[in-house]
Length: 326
Ligand SMILES: O=C(O)C(=O)C[C@]1(C(=O)O)C=C[C@@H](O)C=C1
Image (cartoon, rainbow, N blue to C red; front, top):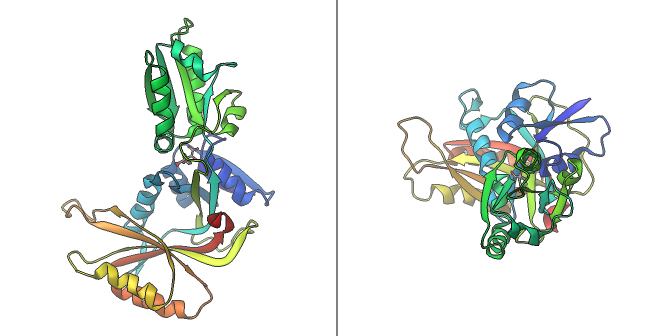
């Protein structure tokens, strides 16, 4: 029985991503984690955990920086194996999943309508920090419609964790109906914890989607049966650092992609420091590009990448999920 770990408790969008990746395999166990860092550390250190599903980016508010920084920190960790400029990470990306994010305003109280909110002195709304950027217009409208109500937004470790928090707070609150505790999460979380949907599909942008990476241990040579809806094209996630103050060094790396006719599908960066006295404003770059992993030219491609980067790390070469094109 193999186990996949995801940001829990059950009912998160991360849980949905794990289900999408592994539901065709009936011998998979789903294990919730308390944080995204725990997903990485458990996968690395716990021999009973074979896979992890972690959020990487959202179509409305961009990078899930927790995950980008965890990939960066693992790459720059001294324990990694180094071959010339290449860093061999302890984990490998083997897949991607796209989850439709349909946020709901959720309450522990049945038959509550959104118009009832104006009757409360204080409304607390719990959710994962990534969510606020996906419902900012909705929250602004809510506050405008309840001018005499104080609103508090409270970060929780996950969306389904927010539902449990709102239920717990409401059960302890005074019963004189002055304080209301709500959550923003998916419909699954509401049903799982017997809560009630006050309003459905509240994200600012319809089609809001979060992209998840599926990871395994690098030294685990067994690949799981891939889910359906995958294209033959492979995506590669590569991270690299450059010489400081070396004009054109980034262009030199991107020119290698051009020289080998490899289409780059994304580029992003995050700050990093390689030591406590290190200069500020240094960046590590993340690029993704399409390739045919069997193509013999990839060997010389990586040789040239190795020459242009101070450090570089290939996190994985994995099938493009057809949902990318929808
Ligand atoms: O809290 C969840 O449900 C998660 O799966 C985490 C997460 C995220 O970190 O971006 C995933 C998808 C949504 O964008 C909101 C939250």
